[in-house]
Amino acid sequence: MMFKQQQEDTSSLTSLSPEIQSPNKKRHRSLYYAIFAVFVVLIVICAALLIPQSGGSSLELRLNYAVGERMVYETTITTGQTIDESFYPITTSLTTIMDVLSENSENYTINQAITTNPNIGFPGSFFPIDVSKATYYNNFMVPGAPLIFNNTDSNPTILAYLAQSSVKVGDVWIVPVNISTANVGMTGKVTLKFAEIQEITVPAGTFQTMRIEITSTALNIHAYGNSNDDPLITILSTMSTQINGTSYIELGTCRLIKADLTQLVTMDSSDIERTSYTEQILMEYTKP
Image (cartoon, rainbow, N blue to C red; front, side):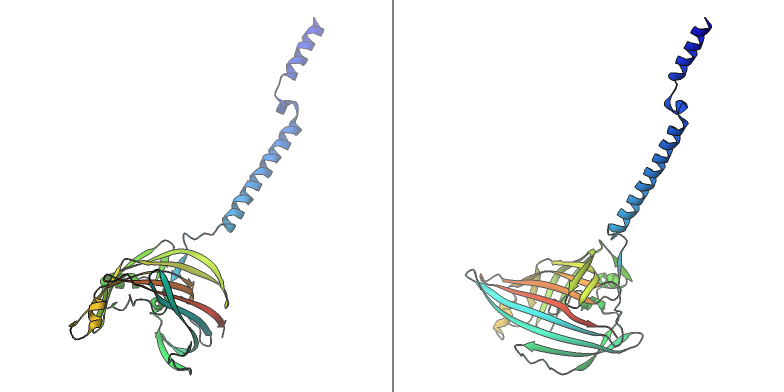
């Protein structure tokens, strides 16, 4: 009987959990769990470092150049018209050299030289210009684009946008256009979407930029005056244009690194379409 009882006790021990049977196995399993947890944490940290965190990124809205730096831009302008489905282009290139001479609290003094190919009359020598640090928005689009910010003093919508100290990824500006000169005006809306932070490489180097996507409604062109005195007035009164482009603005400086813009002009009275494509690229950048 005693032998039978001892046998029953031994069999009951074998039915206990593996942890009770082997304390070493329990400690080993706990060690595995700890190592696995650390491994998971490392993966999460690495993923956070590798994935672009663009949601909180922003672009400071102020020119921030340095005295002594030089920027050299190459601008290519292709204009032409489509007649009977055939496109007839004319291409002009401009080289612009900008040397930052001095600054004060509000302005930069910049020596600027522009040469063209073919030569269309721009001076080849340097001449000084004063550039306000607050006019960063002039870099949002390439030269030759509609001057959508020209009525900042009278347009509360534009003033509200420009009162911001920075913009974040995902922000959208819908800018009302109301341009007028002595004989011609333009009305409509232009949309600027601050799409993402993007690193781009141009001949001048590699830069961290904010990519801005530019689109518009049909911008109606108005003519003021008497068509009997000027036939051009009649032509302009039937025209509208649409724009579409992309600009890359350097973070921290609002420097234009690269931009392109297409303008399509249509006339209600004919089947002729006029197209203008402009691209500007920073070719050289010299630090002070």
